[in-house]
Amino acid sequence: MPSTPRSPRSALREFLKSEAGGGVLLIAAAALAMLVANLPGLSERYFHLLHWATGPVLSPKYGPMTVHLWINDGLMAVFFLLVGLEIKREFVDGRLASWKNRRLPVVAAAAGMVAPALVYLAVTGGRAELQAGWAVPAATDIAFAIGVLALLGSRAPASLKLFLTTVAIVDDMGAVAIIAVAYTDGITTLALAGAALVLAVMWVLGQCRVTSLVPYLLLGVALWYLVFLSGVHATIAGVLTALMIPIKPTPAAPDADDSPLHRLEHALHPWVAYAIVPLFGFANAGVSLAGSSAGVLLDPLPLGIALGLLIGKQLGIFGSVWIADRTGFAKRPGGASWVQIWGLSLLAGIGFTMSLFIGGLAFPDDPLLVDEVKIGVLAGSVLSALAGYAVLRLAPGKTPARAERAMDKPRNA
Image (cartoon, rainbow, N blue to C red; front, side, top):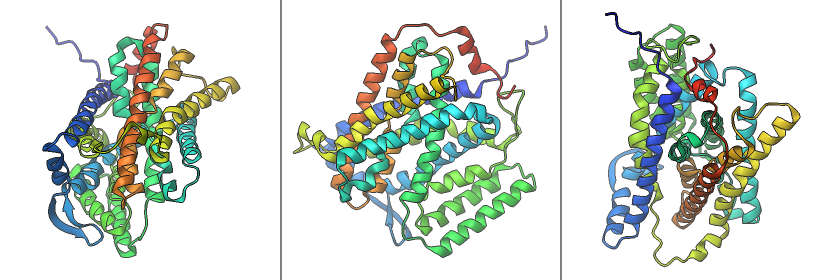
């Protein structure tokens, strides 16, 4: 008997499934880091391991490479490579390929970054030593948020998952721009010129229709090193490399096996979701609470971050969606009630991975402030997760079948 043709796989469904599993693992890694960082005997070993100088000296500015540096500047460059691939795919070949589909996610993401920053600045009272942390509560952790949505099952409509994913992708673009512009100083012109030359070579390869991933990845490593030397944060090299990877549009199917971008994205995603992001969480979430009290949450820095994530995110995203829908600029996600959109806006306040990352850049020379950043991010993210879960768990309504089927509908069909 002839075999039944296999239906094309849905890249988005696989992405959400992988993000959900990775999000749950990230939660476990963060909890383990907090436990280890506060257990007698293990705490010293934990912090010693993170600051263990493995070498070599890649840049005089940073000295010998430590385990923490390899994770935050090396492995996270791979994370940003995947972020760049997802951004390019969605804008060239996905649900953000048309302005009509971009309107709501772009407006919601922008408002969802501005409002938390304003809340943070209001709470910190314009204190000069804390102003650098304004962007910490501006980011959304897609893995963590999708992990919470996965726990809700069918109570979270597919349209919400799609909307959260597209908002997070636009949010990632904003975070990348903030890192590149706001947290870069002491530029080394020669290294930056070398990086530009490497990018030019990658662009030429694309114009010559070179589809092998090998030259792009080798040049990507060289680009990472040059960006690392230049003073721009090395993870930006991951995004720049992604933008140079060729993509074959697939309007009639979710993916194309001969599209370099699709191949690389599928190859990287399990490693990033199940290894790199949880490892980053374990290396960055640990903060010793010895000698601290609950009152530390009322200090301006952690309080500003926590309220920025919990209050600012929901005000920015829910408010912008409501205004866009009421003015006719863009319609709210189909099949989702206003209560469910409110719940999603709360979940967007989970800023774990990117917020911790930006916090380390904002206060690179002050470990005490970095610890306060961690406390604020953890508090705001946990409260946002619990509140968002409760609202969506109690929200009435069922997921329309047509919204579920939309996840498997070919893009741009």
